[in-house]
Image (cartoon, rainbow over all chains, first blue to last red; front, side, top):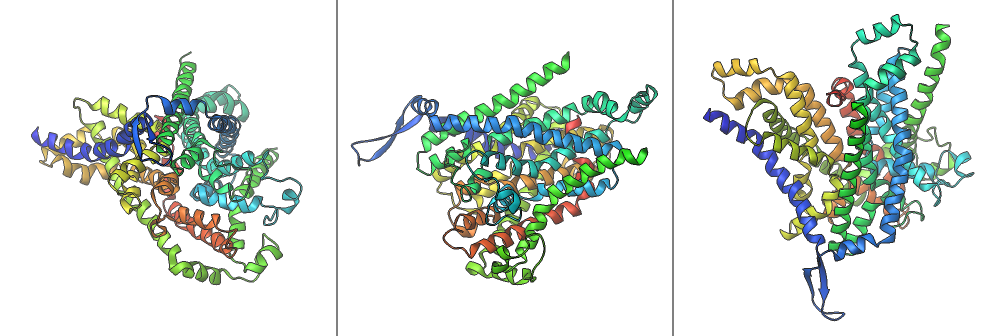
Length: 287
Length: 277
């Protein structure tokens, strides 16, 4: 039995130590930092960090651009996440329907964009959108994809392009896991392909869809690489365009206490949203 | 009738294939052109094939800093994903196969870590590392990249499903130690799952942008994503960087595409297993 205890320590300790050091400690440290503020004696006096209570949070909650950026990513998420997952679901159902030949090829072709890092994807699409560089001049000369109205949706396209195939694979794998007997009954009842997809397949892969939605919500609130890159292509993207860009620009001011408060609020908002979504879907499932 | 049913789905899949692959095709074509041809020739087809020259220029620019970035990325990502997968596998395995006080507590804390966005940690990590004057070092990016709570979650599910208790009992009766059993028997049973965890982890670190952006100042330490980003921000001042950014973008996606191709049989079916349970 002694050997077991030693083995347990060996298995669990390395991960939990690193987790504590690089996950828990930063969270606690961010909370602590967000409760401090920098005070100066006179304009050019020495700066000292003093306890500031909720002073930083007051600034966060009255910071217009920050809440605008939150609103922006929420709008982005409300449109982009359903479009992306809708496409992923349709492609997965088509692959699974038996109506499509060359399944291996499509699976691979759709998954390839996932191998492109967000920064690189954004650079590539930035070129494709730029009026004087794009191969699609017919489109880019008619509409400016990088102006203030459209640039958010141009970014949505980049994110969709990267992640549809990945989400499709997650949904498709869970379609493959449905036992064949389930379909036998539907066939006997005379259900067509559409009917089977709607009444049998989609409900059965709901857990996979919920999981991908949660990951997408988290990803949307964290948008950073795309807007950071697009700043070089478009003047419509400000340094506070998304919450994470705000965190980054605030920390390069540098105002670490305020940036920490932004981080804490953003992390809380993310947890609340993804947790809330999980709770809502679970309750729906119980009925 | 049967054939008519197939036309619409195939059209949809064909159009989608164009959408996913044309940008990459364009990148390949663009990276093979000379600077003058880039704007003056048909964008989606090759002109003079100058890819080799562009590659030479890319790897020579700034004392070969691009190669350095690629190697950095491979070490940051490959190293963190390999070691991180092993740590996550050990922890998830122990959580699945042993009963001990605090087991559920550890699992729940780690699981809630999945919901904490990694980018929210970047700034506080920077502040902590600066306490030790350790920012702008290899370790400041590498160490935090090792931690993968989602990997622990997956490893626990996979270990429960693929490592039978009877087998562990038998190994114990044969006098095999717990650690040896893990490395010789359990990891083998969990192997396909471990590759999946590795791939997830690899992509996550490869894509992580905020942490190196905040942590690193010295160009030599950049991963390739940050390097390309910094070149791209200078394109307006140094126009010749544009071709380098394009060629570099192409080169930077090659390793992952190769990894995906080689590991196809693992991600093709293994990816969703975590979601079903």
